[in-house]
Image (tube, rainbow, N blue to C red; front, side, top):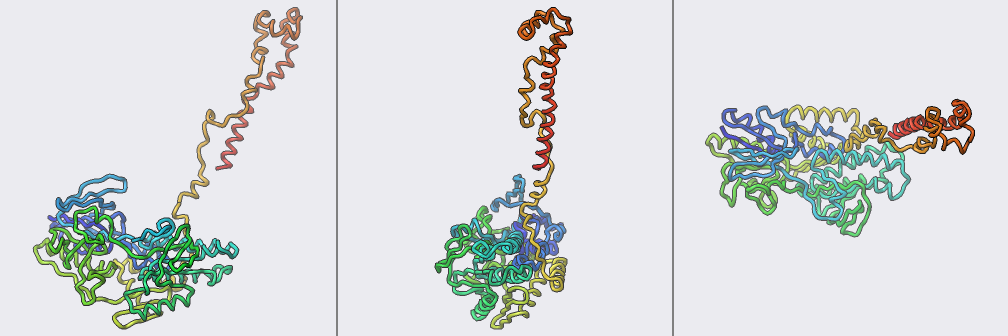
Length: 528
């Protein structure tokens, strides 16, 4: 029985695991999928999650729920020694162990690619994970609430200024969806107008969305401009230190929300393996999705998705002759990957990955979109419906599709949800603020000025003097009353009653201390 290890549970990894479950019998192979996240995120939905049009949990697919026979391990693969067919797996707790395998499917995906621009790493946020999309949405809504209670000025302008870097599909869709969300919020804040909001998209190239025609991309820019969203072409971001945006054109403004969408790169975990990589850190492969070094197949190793450099043998190849890193390729490659691995396990030949371009479709906010296939271009509401129809059906699993379509249906009648949950970043803050804590022990309580009262002079001597011999009491009494010896034994005590009363008045200091301790506790409770 073959041991198959899938490194990465994104599009390609999840589809490969699903395909292997359907194709191979349990006696033929044991499949293990390792990923640090317990779900696959459908990335084309991130802009709509950021705009509040899709519930975040509906844009992710549970691995354990939909993989019935695959062993799912929620952990990281920290290194792979394919020469010995061993992978090192590290759990969140830090524990590591070795995992042996016969066939490796490397589908680690990609991460956000940034450049060393001052301030970007400290102030910007990506649009590559579901958590980032939720944070962007909450930030924008929270900023509107804060700005509505402020007078007009630079501080309010900063809160209402959104900057998106990158004019590809991800950047344009994010930019347009956030503009749509902001427009929908304005009726809720009569203190603000659309003129108070400022949206900037920065693109270093001379055009946006290279997947569509130049004419279509120009229409998109015009549509955004009509909605008070400005696109800066042939412009580079020079600095974002402290939220102060400096452009290569010399323009400067402040922005509280900076979203980075300027590209992705292969997951760095590929560099911890002995698999062959190209100059961009991608695993080199053949059209059959088999890992290859200089065209020579590396037995037992497969790859697909964003982390791979798969030759594009279609009629319209991507840049450099390789498949571009997008969901459309990852899903298709994942399906073929399962068939090819199963074929090799059974001694059959694998097939090459060859695809036909289905066109490009993008959502530009509620009711607006663009679709292009060849020379045919559709714009506006019809393209928006095509966008939702395609991606609503493309997300894996029918239960996810129904949740997404159900959410859109509810929004059609009820409107999008405009409630932000900014406290999710620190969910225990409210509990800690009002939680009751144990009072400190008495011996550790703050010192109370009772010591002088306890050390009152002559108090003990006055109490015991009647029981002591007269000689012992003489030094203490002769100066005050020389004839005290001739009187009855009780008379000195009677004459000293005032002194004893004074002493007793000083002794109740412990009671004062207890009262002070109670007061300190009360104050501590009040502070808590």
